[in-house]
Image 1: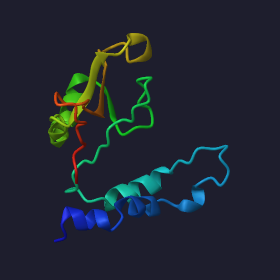
Image 2: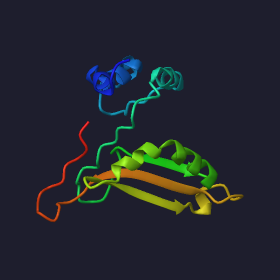
Image 3: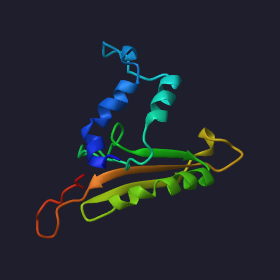
Length: 143
């Protein structure tokens, strides 16, 4: 069995992108690329289930925006959200002296959700921690 490092060295990102039909990718920047459902399912089925979740810290943009950064958004009932979080416990290792989890959990306004139940939204992003007490910058987790 190959190691995680060997798996990454095989260019995991390139592998995933090649699983999608690149003919669908736009040549002009007027339309954003998207995959079709059958392409997503085909790619998803080929992914290994034993690969650690790799999340990169959000860039320091200064405006607090994280759209397009590595992150997870889960919406729905508390039962659904908690069942997904139970499967994502490995992300908790990123709460450490070098990085911190940016977490948000709140109710959804009933005007935009199902009126017959309370719905929620849960966000996860990662940030690098600031400088330590000694004035040295902290570093991100190395793989």
